[in-house]
Amino acid sequence: MKAKEKARWIAKRLHDRYGQISVAKRDPLEMLIRTILSQNTNDNNSERAYRALIERFGNFAAVKNAKADEIAAVIRIGGLHHQKAARIKQILNRIEKREGDLTLSFLANYTLNEMMTWLLASPGIGPKTAGIVVLFSFDKPYFPVDTHIRRVLTRVGVVSSSDGPHEQMNAILPRDPLFMKQLHLQLIRFGRELCHPQSPACSQCLVRDLCNWHLK
Image (cartoon, rainbow, N blue to C red; front, side, top):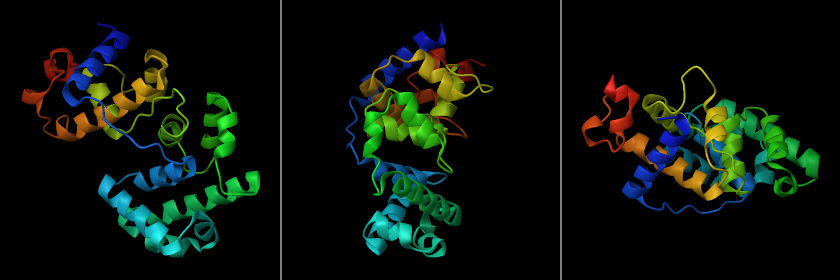
C-alpha cells in the first residue's frame, strides 16, 4: 500500500477509535506562545507555564517589556526556560516592530506559503510550531508533525526516517484543514496511549496489520 493510501487508512481507523476530537480555536499569538512553551515538555507542564506567565504579567505587552530572566523564572516548570524566554521576547519585539501592536491578525491576509515564511523567520520557530498556528488559528491546510506523530508515522511506514516528515505528509494528505486537525490530534493521542517510544502496546494496536515496525 502506498503512503498516501496508508495515511488515509490510518486516519479512518483512528477516527473509528477516537471519534471527533473537539478543539478550541485560539488567538494566533496565544497559540504561538503556547506552542513555544510546549516544546520539549508535556501538556501539563506547558499549560502550567502558560498560566503562570499570564498570571504574573497579565498580558503579552508586559511580557515583552519584562527581563528575560524574570520571564524564565516564571515559566521554569516548562523546561528550557531561559531559551524559551529569550525566544518569546524576540518574537514579541518582532511582531510589535512589524505591526506597532502585539497581534498576528495581519497573517490572515497572507497566503499559506507567506504565513509559513513569516513565522519561520522568527527565532526558534520551526515547521511544527508554525504549522500549528496556521492550521489551528487560521484554518490553513498545513499538517504539523510533532514527536509522537513522527514516531507513529515512521513506524507504520508512511514517512521515511531520512526525509523531512512535514514535506512528506503535506504532499500526501488532502488539503482539508478539518481532516488535518483531527488526524493531528488523533495521532498524538494514539502515540501517547499505545505507540510508546519504548515497549509500544502492539497487542492493542488498531493499525498493526499494516505497521512495518510491528511486522518486522
